Length: 134
Image 1 (cartoon, rainbow, N blue to C red):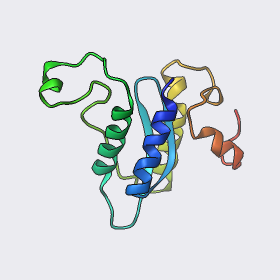
Image 2 (image 1 turned 120 degrees about the vertical axis):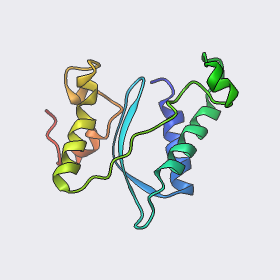
Image 3 (image 1 turned 90 degrees about the horizontal axis):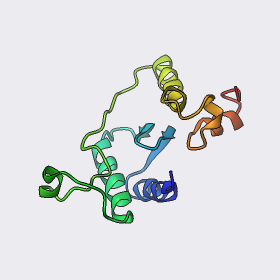
């Protein structure tokens, strides 16, 4: 989590080039989850992930172990090659994914309570009165 500021800068970089709204996010030591809303008619999640991963990776010092397959493709060892995208179909689906995202640090054993994880949009939702602190 020591590079969280670099990740935030990468998110800003992407938003300046390809606007989107971050509805929810949680950043964990080895992965992240988020819900993004794109502009109507724009479904290009791939470009945004490509920009995000690239900007963050270029800001990181090199030195991580990479496989020969990644080396051949000139890839870093920081990110998975793929990402999972899912179209949320209604408010209940959206709410379930919001809860899943915010519960993830507890699920993985990083904290005992959702409120204890600092790198989460959960805190913004508490401030807005959407979630209770507990």
